[in-house]
Image 1 (cartoon, rainbow, N blue to C red):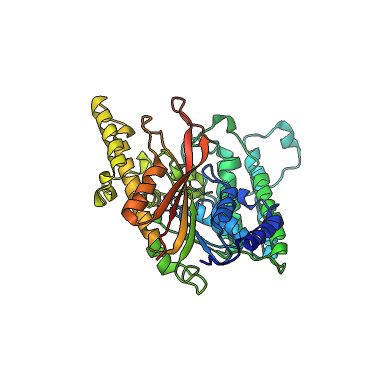
Image 2 (cartoon, rainbow, N blue to C red):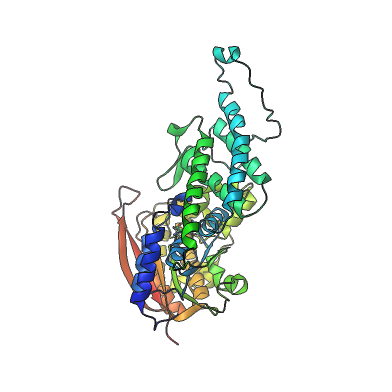
Length: 464
Ligand SMILES: C[S@@+](CC[C@H](N)C(=O)[O-])C[C@H]1O[C@@H](n2cnc3c(N)ncnc32)[C@H](O)[C@@H]1O
């Protein structure tokens, strides 16, 4: 970390990059409901005085907001996440050096292949009398496609014809060479699934939306997404070649934040580069918090279409690598809470005891309520392991910012997430100068609970 540099000059450099790149819409190539805005990152970059010599880590990188914002600011960044869909998104959004001529060629070929097939699928069972009198168009054989609904698709999320079209699309995308140009098509394919093609509503949990059922113009949505990517890439490629624009290098890695120090020490070229000498300078992230958000459900269609959730076993593998933040990813063998004696933290013990008493008094003998205390224990223990791993690779004086919500999802027992995380990081791991700043009040998802606070927890790595 270069603390002697003139921050004002660096901030100006940030601003000039932002000015040039602010009309691109790359963030919206693919988003999900839990994404934050890049203003969080630009704000913190200014507040911390982050310079273009620094390295930022986002260990819960999601769709890639932090990594993309850092790249635009000219700051190097590593983004990691457990979800293959998020890893693909972050990688594609930050990899601007793709061959656009090749992209256009493949697009034309693909759209030409899809167009008559989709038209045929749309017209199935829809033939009117005039269709019979028109000159018959030759039927295309669809025998080679498997139209069965993937096993892990939640019921009713895809109507029959859009499902068929998406399976044809997947077939042809999978036939393309396995390279960076094809990654653009893969991202466009998974992006339109929840946004345009599926019968899904996010509120914020994903549920079936019967109002959206029926045929969809999959080709138009797909073409529009590809067009948006092409426009943005044309703009950034023009900007990239200007002398005074310095873009950050970005590395995206699939990995569990509870083991992230070990993973990056072994695998990360950026961390181990001469420029960064094995140290992360700043961490900016929004981790899960105990709130019953199931990331693998909200991204279910995307994971299936990437071939990452074709069976229970594959899906469980992703779930098990996630922080335990909801009752549907608690497993019998989970024992991180016990390993680190998490209940020795008074706040955690108090919350867990209240929940256990409630279960006994109210005779809660079935349903997910039984697991609430376990979620609290395993969540905070997992985050403690994460802090230990970060502590291992963070530069002296470095800062870590966690955007995290308080929780009221568990029988309205308040869980002051940022406060407890701050205590664990400071008392058990060694971070110093913990600060908690209110970021915003979120509307609670249940009517009987007041607004929920989203805070930014800031931890400082002690100077040596
Ligand atoms: C709140 S979201 C992050 C959103 C991100 N800031 C954005 O703008 O897209 C939390 C992310 O943490 C990921 N996640 C959950 N457990 C994880 C773990 N143990 N290691 C790494 N990522 C994890 C989820 O897949 C999800 O993408």
